[in-house]
Each structure stands twice: as C-alpha cells, then as structure tokens.
Picture (cartoon, rainbow, N blue to C red):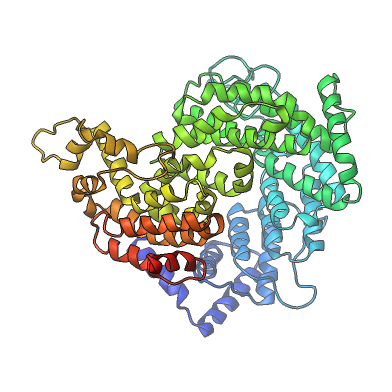
Length: 621
C-alpha cells in the first residue's frame, strides 16, 4: 500500500489537465535549453516521469522535448540525469512522422540506459537488427571495458525474445563465440580487493587469491556461477550473466539457424548430431567445431561442472538454495542440448541418473526433480532406461508429501500441461496417479482451478472415469482430510486449555482410519468409492464451514463441466449408464456445504451438447 502522500501525488499526476500538461512540457523544454541542469531540472524530470508512468495509456511527448531528452540521455555525464531521461523515454511513444524513430548510430556511446531507450523506441526489424549489431559490437571490447556493458546482455535477451528474426547468422556466430569464452575461460583468481593501509600509505590492493567452492575448498580450473569470491573480475561477471541467458540463447539461435537454413536442416540433423558428439567426446580440443556446436559443447561441460559442484555441502543456507536453482537450469540446458544432438544423450544420462539417485529422497529438492523428469521423458526411450522410479517419485511421493507447496504445484501442473500427449503414450501409469494429483487442487483450489481445466481431460479414461467422478464430488472431503493430516502432524493429540476438533479425533481414531486413508490414497485402483460414505460426511460435518473446504467446493462445478465434456469422447454406452447410476446414487451423498448440493445438481442438469448423452440416460432411468 502507498502512503497517503504518495497516493495524493499519483492522483494529481493522473488528473492533470491537457492545458496544464502542455504548459509543463513547454517549461521543461526551456529548462533543457540551458547549459546548466540543476535541481530544478531534476525535479521537473521526476514529476514528468511520475505523470508518464501513472497513466494506463502511453503518452507521446512533443517532438522538440523528445529530442532534447534523447540528446541529454546520450550526452549527459551526470548519472542521475541519464537515469531520469531514459526512464521518461521508456514510458513514451516515439514521435510520429517519417524519420522520427530513434536509432542508435555507430557514434552513439552505448550504455545500458541508452540501449534500453533505443529498444523502447525502435519498431522495425531493421531497427532491431541495427541495435543488435551495436549491442554485440559493444561486447567485443577489451575485458577491462566489459563491466560497463553488462546490461547489454539482458537487453539483447529481450530482443531475441520478441523479435528473434532480427538476428542474422553473423549475430548468432559472434555471440556464440563470445559466450564460449565467457563460460569456459573465465579466470579462477579473485578480482582485486582493496585493504585498509596505514595512515600515510592509504589503501592497498590485496594480492588476489584463488576462487573457492561453496564448501570453502579451492576451486579448480573451471569458474562457474557456483564459485565464491570476495570480488569478481570482469570476465567472471560476464560468466555469471552468460549463464543466466544461456538456455534462452541456445533455444533462440537454434530456431534462427533452422529458419535461415531450413532447406537442408532435416537432411543433416541425424548425421551431423552424432558426428559432432563423437568429435566433442573424443577430441582433446573442441576448437575445430563450428561456433554454435562449440558453444553447445561448452554448455554441456558447464552444466556437468555445476552438477558436480552441487554435491558439495554449502557453508551458507542461501548458497544451498542457489545450488538447487542452478541445478534446475543445468538440467534444462542439458535437456535442450540433447534435443538438438541426440548423440549427447549417452554422455548426459549417467550424470542425470546419478543426480536423481542423490535427490529423490530429499523432498526439499522437488523443484529439481521436475526438470529431471522432463529429461527422462524426452530421452529415456533413446537411452533405453527404466523410468518408473522417476514417475513414482514425481506423481506419487511429491504430491502426497508436498501438496501444500505452491511452487511445486505450479511447476508440476505446468509439466503435465506441456507434456500431456507424451505422458499418455510414454507413461502408462500416469492416469492412475490422479488421486494424488488432485491433492494440489484440493489444497489450493482458487489458484489452480484454471490449470486443472487444462489438465483434467488427460486424466479421464475409460478405466478412471467412474472413480474420478467420485473423487471430484468428494474433493471438499479431500481438502478437509489434508487439513486434518497437517494439523495432526503439527499439534499434539490433546491441546491443553483448548477445545479439540471432533474431526481431528476421528482422523486419529483407528475405527475410522480406513475412511481417511482411502481419501488420501495415492493411486486409483478401486474403480469406485468407499462404503460408509455418509459416515465420513458426518465425521467431517464441522469442516463444512472451513474457508479452504468452501473454496474447494466452489471449484467442483467448473471441473464437472470439463469432465462431462471429455467423458463422452472416451466412453461407450455401458460406461455412460454406469456414470448415470453414480450420479443418481451421489445426488444425496455429498458433504453438507451451503449451496454445494444445489450447484452440483445444476452442473449435472445443465444441457450441453457434449453431455447430452449423460442427460438422456438420466431421463431414461
């Protein structure tokens, strides 16, 4: 929330009249005409930026003011003025009319601010291509001059995201060469560190020592993002930045190359891939490889080095999280490299398999296990390895133990959404895990219901249809059971001075344990639902007004529509008749949540062209 004063300033900026705004433009233009730019100019630029940024639509400045701001942004030696003018210009549209779009020329001093302005003001492919050339040319300087241009890499990343066709083959080759140098050949000595000297001698430059690993050991001859230093040198900074955009760049230059050489790409892919892999694996030097293939090889080596470093016990907890984040990126890069060159699969799989064996029992590493699962899904058949243990972990253990982890829930559902067809063909047991996968939804229905609208159809098969329908209708019960499971683990059996929950006592009671175990099952298999369903509903009566349970119930009608739209495409008349019997049986066997029963009846009775068969069978019975 903004403070009252800030809210007032934003309101004034939004409500400024057009006449007053034009006068303000004229005043700033006159201020910028002078040779001296003092505090009054800075105050005016700050107010102008607030006006530009606080409105929901983009304004266009007068041409003269726009040109003066551009000139000041490029030529000013005062950093505050450069920052303010570039911030204002990024919030504006380029001037209208021919020849008014701003483009950096070879003589323009390229900084992160001027490059950002040029990126926001360019529009055509030619402009973006020219800007790409300038950005890449700025990275050809001496190592000592690199640090001032570090932000050009993210800007270049933005260009290849929104306009990859602006990159030429020369651009791709140039940056591929530079990335190879930054990734593999960064120095392993710390940058210069100033130490306090005597009164007369002043500060001294301490002799740089070697870079160290996260566990404190001296680093070898390969610097990576997981190396520690009191002060990084310029080439080490470029190493860090290069890794941050490496995966995106590999994908983009591969697509650009495909687009520029589509005529013979298919003919050469199978042959060249295996040849490059053999050369990379057996040659003492990869310098004979073309730039793009050499970058692929160095990327492969870099990721293998990261996986090796992740096995070291970090001295700081934050570094442990950094290890996990780097592992996620490293496995994804290896996956991308292997997709481009199938010959790399046999070199990468032992490393990835060993990593899975090390992490699969550590629930805190769930975010790393999903990229590993993607790697197995894409390359398991090529390497002829058994992947069942991976799917048992990803679809079995993780949802059961980490259903309340929002990041893991999002990543798991994104993984399923991206690979639905491949999971159906390559992972036969995938649909059997739907009781586990529904736990994410039961715990966080508002945040995940849109994801399940896409995921649910892949779980509906002739073998799961009946049990899945029961599970959807009992989703609020599952939410209550998960809540009780967490509460039972976090609190003692009896709470001194407090009033216990009868449902929690029932959850702990051996007499009712079977009912809750069925709700919390990990795999399908019964084909139906439990007996004594009414008993379960009575035990969970007090959960009917829990906010999480109510939210879960509100998502069920939406998912029932998706279910009925899908089930008619996978079932025959016998299965449809069985589903009708389930609907008749369950019409009065629902958890007594306000409006829930009425909403379920309305969802079932709503005439839709895709669930007409179900409605017809209901009428017949």
